[in-house]
Length: 201
Image (cartoon, rainbow, N blue to C red; front, side, top):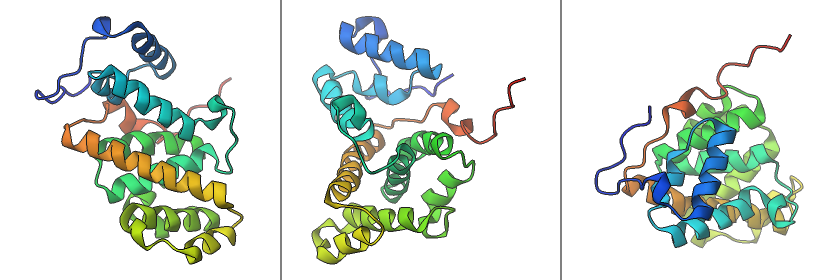
């Protein structure tokens, strides 16, 4: 059972939503087995919901927009988890940490990245990526050519840098909306990807 939504911003009833939003939420429910609270929490403002998830998908599922990315799915989730932790967003750390564990097939990595990515079980390339992302997150006004050069040393080009920065910035928005509105992670997220699934026989 999901935690009750914040009484100030109650989630709308699924049956009362516009068809396109309701159908998308039902697709997510079919795939995940539950409805992540962000989908209903933002649906109270349909135009913003559509804009939010259009930009989300353009960044996190670039193939849907006919674009390729130099970042893996797991790397995109590492960025979200680390920068959401820096922004102290409970919802995004728990939800995207769950997705990160699944994509990377590492049950411990999300907790490590959220607490101290410099000590996490990630590659030097991913550490350089997070150095860049964290500077965008916390000190974007200080970015200079040296930051891009440090990325390039690990094989990231300028388009990859844009992806890292845009994901960081977009989830900075998401973090703040989730936090101020009292959005809570679904209980299902906490256990996802922590225990390997038994092998099929």
